[in-house]
Image 1 (tube, helix red, strand yellow):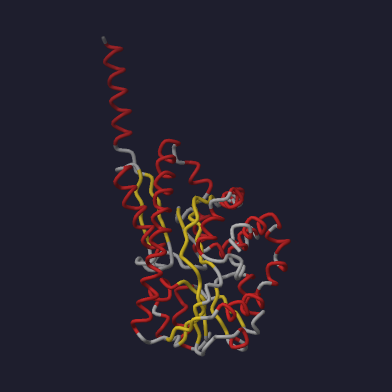
Image 2 (cartoon, rainbow, N blue to C red):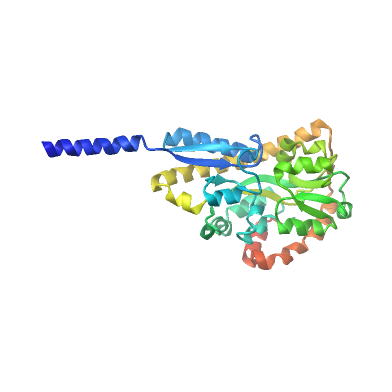
Length: 327
């Protein structure tokens, strides 16, 4: 009887300790507004985790660079100060060159082609390409196609000559604007509007939803609808943190990630449509639409970058990307 009582007491203490165990905390930091595809995705992930994992996992979301900015977030992840990020794929250049495939201008005909590529096995391999460097790719989040904005009309490639454009940290994007005879300056997203207003740069590239959320039309009177590249994020954690989560909990989290990713990518298309309409309705920026021939002129100037970066990205990755186009 004494042994039975002791065993029951031990089990009671064990379950009591488990019930009152501290939750796993996931600090999710990002640099954009909450009403953007990435911002809404972070909040949806937070809500679904709270609903399905109760007190076992707690997600804290820090938007608008309120915890870490563009320049600091990757180091913060490696130090364990945040557990989840969704940086633009351009941010991974220091860890792998293969993801530069997403920055190549006019490589993908449209967003549908990007989505087809992301379903290919080669794209899935890219998610795990940095695992050995403590970066664990969970999913690709899309934010639509990029447009050009500037202080003057950009209808032909030569119109960009001499201007300075704000870019993300990317060698491919630097080369893209060099091909136009323009400068490129690496500036964090949160500082972009100030740089445009101050005249530090005279143009930028971004998706409609980000342009609208950041109010770029206050400084950019012209927007050219080029659809020249895709803006993609990779949802990541650190390999050490993610693998430390108990298997059952980790499986639940990965199922939630898959569900959120589908919703983020669907929302991105709607938010970009809405962002485009918002900017046009505001009337502060004039939209320039390119004819097929005009767009082809831009593509011809930038297409040599595909060959220039083939060795770094990998011919197999480039082939996989090109085969998803329908033409």
